[in-house]
Image (cartoon, rainbow, N blue to C red):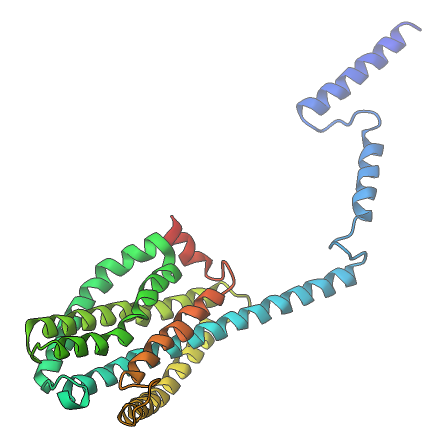
Length: 298
């Protein structure tokens, strides 16, 4: 009987061990104490690093949420600047190009008629439709919407300042105002500017919506409202600024200035692309527009 009792105890222990391994219902001797000690140690660990109480952890979380919201509004402000800058540059080109093209040759223009100028706009608009439906989606899939806009806007910054200078070189070299080199230069620059800047019309809106979607507590409607107001302000300010620069440049060149010329308005458009479109996108926090960037990277 004395020998049978240890055997039964051993058998009971085997049953407990086997049950714990098989089904996890029976507990081996000493397991309950170990689990209690583990729970006690985990309870001693802080909920948030540096916080020992629930109140401290809640306060730290609120501070983190406020900081994230602050950085979110900073990114929104940068995108609003991009939207206003893009509208300003696009509208500026549509203003200053016809004025330059219709100006008399003796005043630095190329003496084109309105139908001739309108033909370049029509050609550029037709090609823009094809690029927006075919080329732009390919760029977005390759680099994301931010990379696609940067890939278009960086080379676009060199186009407005070089256009009047190239035309002037051709005219000074003896080519007439409707010679094929002058016509080709007008068509190439008009198509390039329209297509490179045209990506921004849809691109800025896509970036704004995706950015608002990824920010806590930010409504897409509110973000789009700020963008729309900035674009409206640009429509009112850009014509005044471009007209003032064009007038100042022409008067300065007539007075013999070595620093300013009739191309001042075109130079301002190039700098406007760099400062108002490219630079704010480069200042956006990394990963601020994660969805479109990840789609582009895939």
